Length: 95
Image (tube, rainbow, N blue to C red; front, side, top):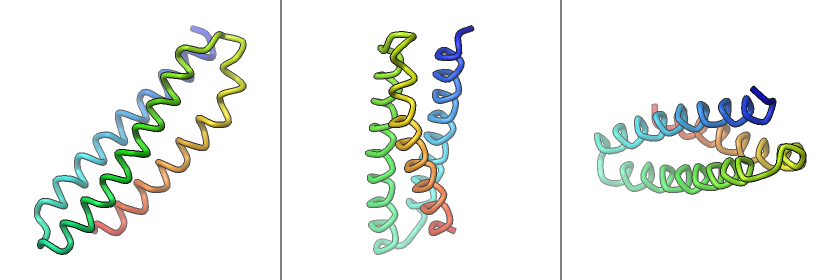
């Protein structure tokens, strides 16, 4: 398997993990009082937007040539880091 394909698989797995975490946060938000529920859903909407951006970056990577994917790697990692940090932050606030 090429390095690009391995990288894609790693990113897909992380996106799946984050999707599950966002779903868990969504379920937690439903059990909160109205004011907290609104705050949590705002955070979840931001996370979903960031997740969509990360997914778009993954699609861009998949559509890139084997030679060009290294150029995309920096932007992808920035999107991944931002989403990962946001999920950690939201998870700590939801406790």
